[in-house]
Image (cartoon, rainbow, N blue to C red; front, side, top):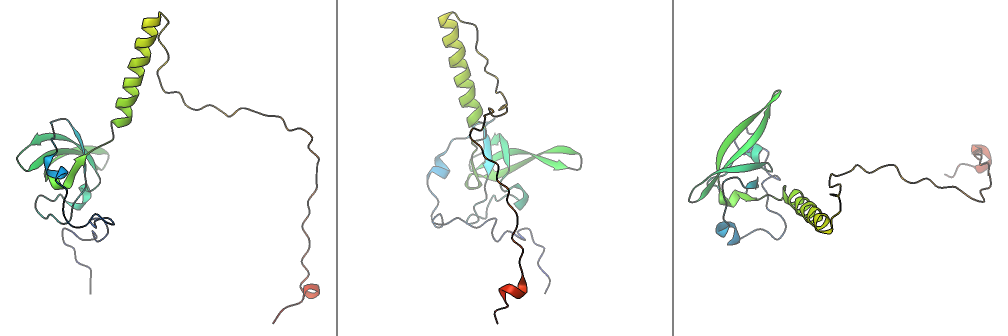
Length: 164
């Protein structure tokens, strides 16, 4: 029999709930406040069929553009051919969670601002706060190295014998 071609085709593992996460949905899911401009990750909860996005959007990160009673309007960039199209979709809160994509940037920005403020207070020039690529590793010298030649030992099938 041929495979089905429905909307949820091929989502057996994609939409499966993880180990020890099956069953009831925590209240945090419903009590979270989302604001316009927040980054959110679309993570489908297969137990809730209402407001479920299409399977392509599972795992994608978008920006909140609308907030309603039970749903969140999310804008996602979708690659189509050689360009990105902004797709706007409404997703119920059960299928959305706050994204941590900006966490590292916000921490880095706070640390940079603190470093600049401390340098200004001490009367020193502003520190370099740009991220630098890691350079080559430091060199080292080998001491007391003796050369040793290693050769392969020829394998003789007649001398070794065949075990049967």
